[in-house]
Image 1 (tube, rainbow, N blue to C red):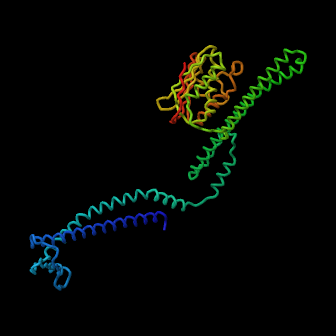
Image 2: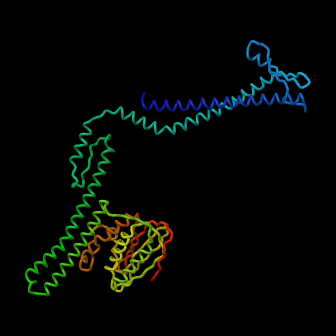
Image 3: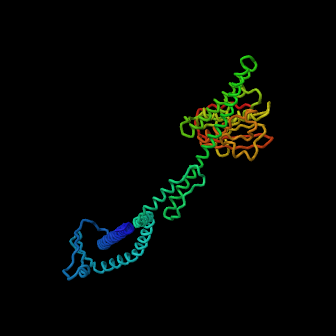
Length: 434
């Protein structure tokens, strides 16, 4: 038996079972109704015959003659009762049985169409329930009839073998409709591999370039020390200071690279816990009041704003945003740290400066690794490594948040981080300052 026929057989058995059950319930209901009507008829006869003296303590007898068939038996049925005085009362039930039989037959005739309609509806419902199974059975039946051609799969294996990750346009196209779905899936996988390979190559190239500059600077000052530093104290002091500064830059770059590498491999420690975002922003505000005297800081905090997150990571992201604002803002300009709840019920922190702003063509790329809106000032004006915003984005993504960036050249930049809010109790509200 094929799978399709097996499904049809199951549906047929289910439908027949429903029909038999419905017919049985119909007959049972009519039999109970007929019995109840017969009992009420006899009680009505007894009460009409005996009047107020009616009682259940009497003799009753249902008898018939000895006719040739059951129809004659019903027609000759006599119901007899004997009252307390010994008087007999009889009731001929033949006519009543004929009327009752006609009434039951009429009731069944009226009910049959409804049974048929219910059966049709049940069949349709059964068909809808079994449609997925019928589809699977048809597919299995079709697959069982397909002849397996090993050559097609060997050709597909050879085509995959010949692909190169370094070739961005590499695709599989064998022109076989039976393998089209598999070809599409493989091509999509190849596309993702090419993109990953491109990002990895760019990352390695950018990292090598960033490390090459401090190494060249250290090498140059080391040569200068070797030639003149022994006899010139000023040259020695300048060289040592430059070497220390470039060593610090290299250390910071390596630490950022390691953070991103651990993040990409899922090895960064992420420990979310209930915390107040407004309190975290206030702590950062107080820190920058102490460590940065060249800018004026303001705080706008609507707290408390409870969230669930990794406090150390969020503070690191906030410091990255604030450091960037300080680097690209004039001295004595205002940098505003704020924290509020937006219209979506999300907890948001933002850093706003009055710096030069970011050109519109650079905005889509500011979170890319090693990207700088102005490469010429990368080192001369404290531009950093180009990894800070990439790290901040990784942290925000890990918290299921997102960035909202607003910037105008000559006006300033505001970067907002929005995080899912989470309620918890007993959180002290930080004092808002300005």
